[in-house]
Image 1: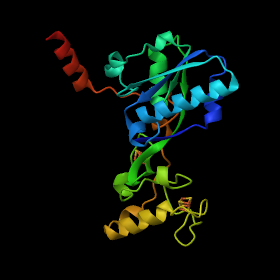
Image 2: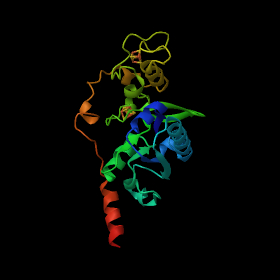
Image 3: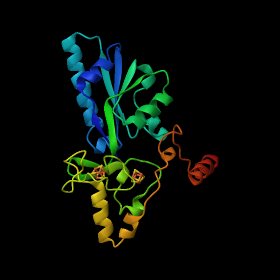
Length: 230
Ligand code: SF4
Ligand code: SF4
């Protein structure tokens, strides 16, 4: 899932400076699960903003609403509020939701309240860790399921770099060296032959450099067309 954290309150308040009527829009997707952008957090932010506006004598009306997902057109019709009627929308979604909603409502500024952090797994109650960076050319088959792009500080495709110290990364002593973990995992799996192979440099065109990446699932498109014609 996508993991995000809330921006500092002052930064959010600063974004609102020229606005008079603002909608705080929660998202019921990943950001609800990681406790940053759901309905509860939207109501909290709306209350904080009302209080701050009163204290600072700002002419600011804050309302709130929520949507199942801000990254999916299917749920737009369930919105109770009309984003087009506001001077701005404070989106509680990840960057995908903010970007998508901005396209759907081009007349309304959608302002991000979160910093989208990473794709993570829930490793303990209230804790998430990065497991993938969406590089578009997955190498987990020969790294024992451990992602060197996301988990090695240098995103090395051949490791270790030589700086490993007591199992920790030379860049960050709090962090396990991803390539040592890969080595140990491959050893357990009896697949050290994979470790010894020198891999060519990654083709970064799969993750960057070609503009917006898109995915079209033809079967799904056909299914939706059939359903709309039925
Ligand atoms: S190699 Fe790329 S796609 Fe595979 S887990 Fe790592 S970042 Fe994600
Ligand atoms: S010490 Fe390990 S994790 Fe850190 S940069 Fe080197 S190979 Fe990557």
